[in-house]
Length: 149
Image (cartoon, rainbow, N blue to C red; front, top):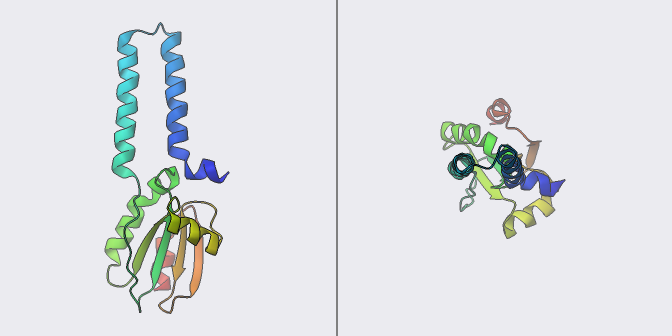
């Protein structure tokens, strides 16, 4: 289950490619159809590349509450919540530290083991003293973040 969650984007792309190839072959396999399929796959790849969540280097800031986003760059759920997370980060800049952790990295695997994280995206809110207050899996509750501050 973890593999499917963490790699949902490439799994879906492979299924679309196989399904598209079968459809093209059943319709006669004309060059134009192959070009349309190839163009669609390139467009999907470009869309994923532009929207994928990326972990950034992080330096701890003491005295501020923090929200950790444990994500995978290949997770469709992580791609889906990225715009909301970006909006919240810009809105609460200076009041909240947002830490994006890539579960595929060595640090991410260590933190996932330490905090018992299995699915992405997982949000963990820490108060200013570093104590975990709550966590959410799958979606960001921006209102809860604001009231926790």
